[in-house]
Amino acid sequence: MQRFVFAVLIALCASGAAAERVRIELELTDGSRLLAEPVEGGQELRLKTRLGELSVPLADTERLEFADGGQTVVVHWPGGDRLTATTKQTAFQLQTILGPLHIPLAAISRAKIETTRPTAFKPIGVHTSGHFAPHQSPAMAIDGEFGTAWSSGDWKGWIELDLGEGRELGHVEFSLQFDPAGPATYEIHVGAEPIRDYRGSAMLIERTSGPRKDQDRVTVKFPPGTFARYVQIYCPESVSWFNIREFNVFPRPGK
Image (cartoon, rainbow, N blue to C red):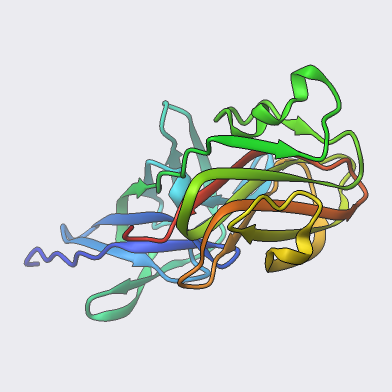
């Protein structure tokens, strides 16, 4: 069969915000090659392993190798980790320049995933409602290390980034240190001046409530044309202490 190539770039969405740009290159069993995007809702591969059932985000993987008519897959991650599993789905739903395509896993021999993650703004300062201990200081929320965390020492509180000047905002992303699992509420506020405890003068972007667990990642997209210097996460209620592993603000795509 004549080789063919379709090429597109995509935006993967997490909680409604574009968090990564991803391209998936499929090598088909007939020798063809397809470059495309997984459609919204199809950015994960559902697997069954000896450890149980799980969903693997495609954006976190490096390549996939299929066998047994698509029933078995070896998942490779950057750094050399890999996992052999049974697939819990039968096809990929892909968006190409020709429109959506339904590609059976049985027709795929290998998939290479290329992910480009946006660069977050580098804040010039971080302010909080307080912190529990020296090793859980506000700086721990912006140190780029998922294993460290800022702890408010309370079931509520706020953390605020100073971006140095007014910026056009794309989305905010923060990860939680959260125990025990349960409900929590978070609000995203932005402003041209420091917000601190005076949220009445700031703009409320979103209020999100629901069940949370440790290592959850929350992503909120800003409306187009949102400019601000200060970005705050406010937690008014939670079953866990308000602790943040990482807090990042990203520019609008293309900026």
